[in-house]
Image 1 (cartoon, rainbow, N blue to C red):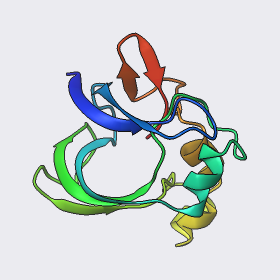
Image 2: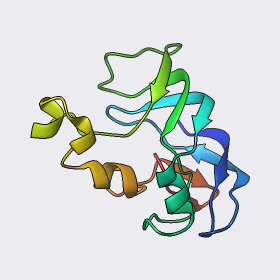
Image 3: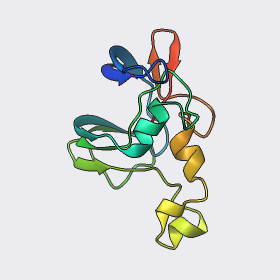
Image 4: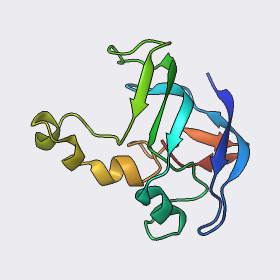
Length: 135
């Protein structure tokens, strides 16, 4: 099910993000949809917005925040709609570093956090006919 939302979308490096209507894709394995209540902007977000980290545009940047789970995809067994969550970086949870308790050193960290795509190359967001990158 595709759901309509509004988000701050960066369309050009060094430009301000603009609020745009977007749609979220149908949730896939191990994905959740969170209604954001609070967000943070970190150095990584500012660096990507300035174009110093190659991140595809247009994009919804950010990985730090909090909110409420609205829905869950298949394979999610530890969260339910209505749960309050805090968001950070993505990690595979399967590599040696993740299983050893060091997810910040995940072998797939860059691909999961800096590509703007799912592992299969699709995006989770759209604005009309245009892909919007992010997580």
